[in-house]
Image (cartoon, helix red, strand yellow):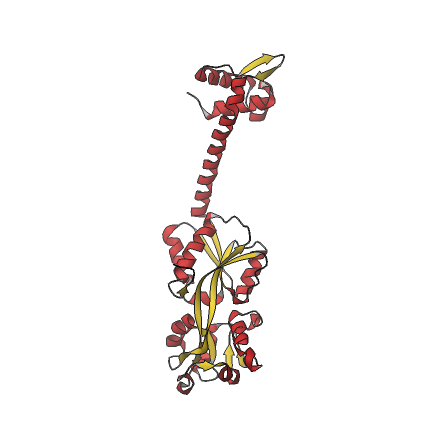
Length: 308
């Protein structure tokens, strides 16, 4: 019966033109290689080599067999690597980038989705701000991420929009929530805004600056904080108003500012969420899984884009 061991000995002998050279490469005794080649010849009923001096010369039949033997061994190696990759995937660490606010209504569910499929993996969701995570992608620290892409520079990375989220104005003063908030009203508002470390690159602030461009003013922040939870609490205390994604408002206001509410901007403003990875990258199975699950998860809480 033809075996993989015979094919390896055949190819090594073919390439070296010597049984001794083949034995050295494979780490076998020369008689063992010679025996495997003879067994292969017997199985196929052909002569594969002719002895010439101390070496061997392949026959035309050996020339015919060579590419097929190479394909067989290559397929076996691919199968081995695939199995090893799957084994590592199921027991290794999966890292994925996620922008900060998304943790409020997607991160826990995303981790649960991953563990439901692969209970043995270790999961790392990385990042606080989309610009920070995009930098990690460019430096190769992450394979892929789900980001708010309005402030993300596209150089070196590929962005695929998958959903969008409305930005809303939140306040504890009911009088400020009777009608949508225009650019002029927003320019006069006293605001508390999160993401102070990334204030110049924060996607929400970029969209608000664009909205206020016609007024010649920027949003006036009375208070700067890092996390959206603190901003919502301060709104509930009546110390300032804010603009945050609608999903965050729906999650946080009932818990942290039950006396507050929200209203749309006029015109409505939308932050876009997208899958991001390095341009031309060949994504691992782990990255592909996270992209699939993150896209499905975010589309359950935000308006899907690119879906027929």
